Image (cartoon, rainbow, N blue to C red; front, side, top):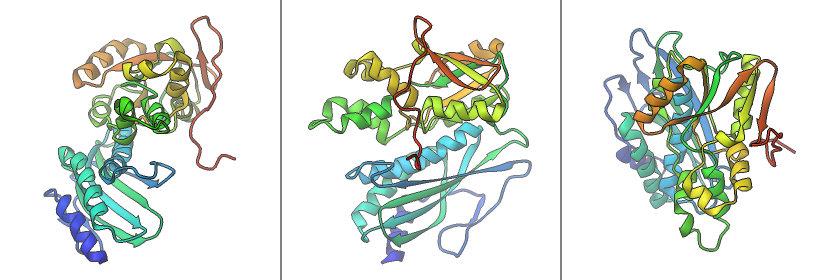
Length: 317
């Protein structure tokens, strides 16, 4: 049965690449890294009831399991190439595997990303994906380059995924479909990350919440950041269903949006905003990098904004 499941996954996710010398079917994959390129590698695990609600559609799980990893490559400015998939299932559910593989393939195909191997086993529903991508030598975007005077920017809109999760508690979540879709099918900003190569001084994807993730940039760069709450981009869909105070908390600490947060020299911010607008995701200026440490958020009257939640932490007490 295990090999039947593997065959089902392979049929749905078959993408041909000349640099895959040996793919699914052997003990290990054999691939060729192009001359003059460096390899960026990321891995994420999604656990039912932790990273996606019980009852999430299999295709949405497959999409999200890949999307969160592609988002990591996007934050590095990398070009996706290959993936590994490890799937733990309570039972050998063929319909579930077909759905998951279809969702995975739906996102993988536009990037010409090839699934080159993985594993299946029995246990609580868990999906682990590892992705590999290419960067130019010393060309990867890092968290450690932000400098005082840089502008802090983000792609897209913030808080939609956290709002979507809140909406799932409603008896009828259909009026909130746009927000729930942002939770279940985030868009990895791969093209935006590539456009930021050589321009952004630091970059991270927003998985645990804006304040928490920007805090990682600050820590790695040895700087602080001042954020203007009024400048945070929030979607019409979220503002239609939530008061400003809730929408602000979602945007600051909700997480799961998989937008990019990055810093650029102030004189490049306008060009970056125009470039990312042409890519369709846009970019908003939300603050600046300053001397010091940590992230400070101010409201419209200059008051400090307190966060109900500073971001996701798997092992918080």
